[in-house]
Length: 264
Length: 264
Image (tube, rainbow over all chains, first blue to last red; front, side, top):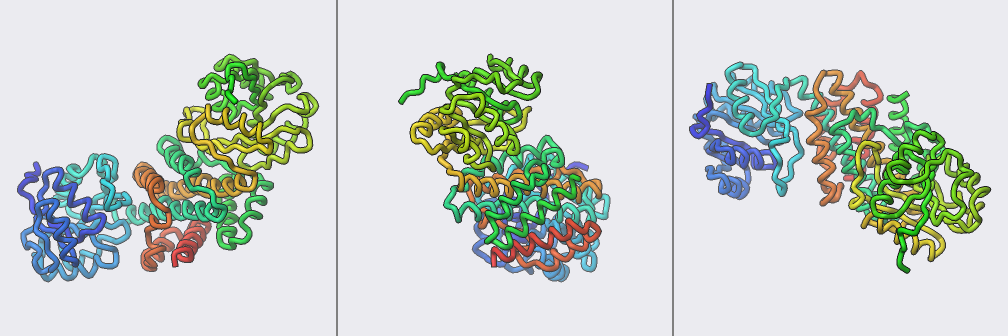
């Protein structure tokens, strides 16, 4: 099968961070996005303008003959949007969503052909993502649909992975640890410095280096610090410094214990 | 005051990661390191060889007329080494240590001139550090010594900060959060994936992007994920997935609560 990509009709539902960057990327690689849906007409117009698509803010206007309908909406909206689309699209339409957290089963009740197109990255509107480096996780029950999705994904970027619903769930919880939770630790680190009027600039090279080390090393081998050394003097000195921040204090103790448990 | 750097006599005590890279950097910028001490003669020889220094493994051989003696030893060894050096060096010798966690007061009992030269980075022996980007935190009670240390630090790199003992303590606890604790979250993320035989490669671009976002943004504004959204459905699904890993489960709940508390 060779993709006649210029003849495809792709519809993107959602003009948030994921919808925005996926739409721009598809346009960039020559896959036409025929329609962009956003509940906010202005948002739809703005994105559609950039990629020569039709902006729509009324779901009933979605093309019935789209080859692929990408739901790039928030997790709590996927089920509802899929249900609405079931009354608009043909039963044999092909739908995917872009979420790490939601099962592909949300489509099952309404459609025969469905799948996942989950780009595993944290997008910002302002920053152009580097798709040459972003894992594109795909899945579909139907081999032909999966083959089609593979071709689309390979156009988006070179790092395409087959990840089923169960794996994707674990991947998502793991992403929460290394992204959401890590960012919270950056925030707490800044909180501690702010009170002492010390600039966060001082920690930035350390933050980058800590992340970069993971590229070529197992995090287990990279663990350093007072917890793994069992350096009780330093641990107690730290706890004393943050004793007035009850909750940061508790988190320090808890993560220290966790490090010691996993490395004992 | 202009530093006649080629006439200086710098002694480095310790050939671990910090001693290794500081010694190489000083040599690189034309500040001669006259002696390298390591308890392991082989380690001293190896490093000394690289930078045309004299290797020693006997503290009593330290030059009495060194302009600067840098203690790049572990926190628990600083006090003992300072005490031993007090019986070898002249009372007016100038000593600094490179630790984020230890007070400069460890020198007080034995020496009149002392300070801190703390490069805030996580070093690896194999990887050449980029000193153009590493904060060099310095301090000394004596204005002349501080001026001298400033000149040395400015040769090492352009990012020189005056950080007193109290600030350095807070900086160090904060560094534990964004380095040691963050690395532990990378480790836990990998633990979750390993059990499902999913490659850590999938998370690496996300890890790098999460760190890079901090360069130009406040971590508070960058917080995303189910915790800050109050997305109980996803949080409960995640907790169900990791329910057999009691301790990771507890940490997930605890950090989630912490995020919700700080962003409410």
